Amino acid sequence: MPILNRLADLQDEIATWRRDFHEHPELLYETHRTSARVAELLESFGLDEVTTGIGRTGVVGVIRGRNGGAGKTIGLRADMDALPIEEITGKDYASKTPGKMHACGHDGHTAMLLGAAKYLAETRNFDGSVVVIFQPAEEGGAGAKAMIDDGLMTRWAIDEVYGMHNMPGIPVGEFAIRKGAIMAATDEFIVTIKGKGGHAAKPHNTIDPIVIGSHVVAALQSIASRNVNPLKSVVVSVTAFQAGNSFNVIPQEARLQGTIRTLDSAVRAQAEERFKSVVTSIAEAFGAGVDLEFQRGYPVVVNHDSQTDFAIEIAESISGPDRVERNVDPMMGGEDFAYMLEERPGAFIYAGNGESAGLHHPLYDFNDDLIPVGSSFWVKLIETALPAWQ
Image 1 (cartoon, rainbow, N blue to C red):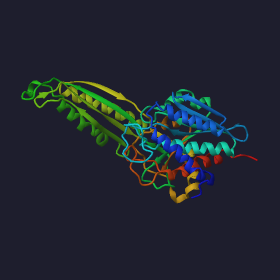
Image 2: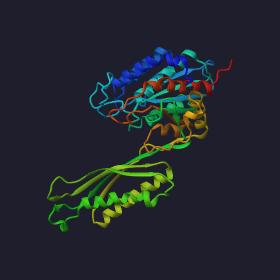
Image 3: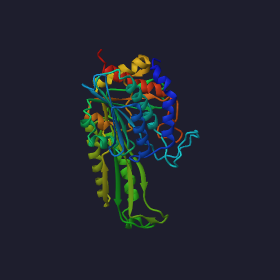
Image 4: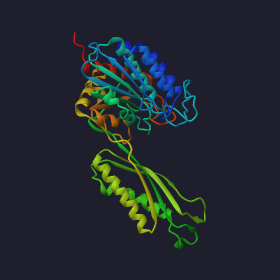
């Protein structure tokens, strides 16, 4: 595999950074230790600028090319936050914080981008500028949007932006990507059905929120099966149903919560409208009241055509054409890199993590063999997109 020799030589050092992050996981915007360590390393590499506190705890570094940074600017993004999961890997570098772990590989993403930043700062074999973006709060906190709201794209005049995520099940050294929608919009809902409680032996004197809730759960599945074009993707999942605490009491209320995932903005709007209509109509038919909370989450991750073609070119230069999946199936999981792709053209690519436990699993661990592959991808992307003219 034609990875860069210098990055292969740096693998152990980069893995040491990665394992340090892994031992000290931090959630959402509370990435204070991680952010400080990232900034410290970037300063030691000799970057031209290192700025902290973007999007609360995000870090931005700038590396200017041989022409002083004039011309195009490309942003490369890594996420830093962990998950509220108890780690059970038994690794000697396992999480030292109970109930928190890097179960999605953001420790590896951060380390790989740091490795690329060190190489690029050493060599400067490009013109233009590179902006390395270390983002908090990908796991539900919309840290990408927070950094954008703090001026990420405009302050550093970013022209294009790229992101990468490790993917278990894809062999190390292989990549996967697609044009258009690659990850789903992630909307959430809470439904509170307000019935009339009473004795379980006299259901006719009640308005049973459990029965009503059961009808709601079943009817919501008709959004996918009977409302949305079968050639389009939508997932409606009720993930919690809470009501009552006694054998002989019909409760006053029932609470449902869940998520709707879509890959198309029109389908997203249609699913939201149908969801609200289904829930309110069923509650009304049974004589119950209902409170609806519908929260729009991350948008659809939409890769831009030209930048996807370019990412494929770079991946193939590292791994070969037969080791790059150009039209991978979309994933119904969400990713807040979507906000960055709404602001600037770019692409989001998967890099194989090998055979491992899945993302968000307590046995998951980032594969350090991916480090030189991922770091090489970043370096080759910059040196190809921003060639240095002699």
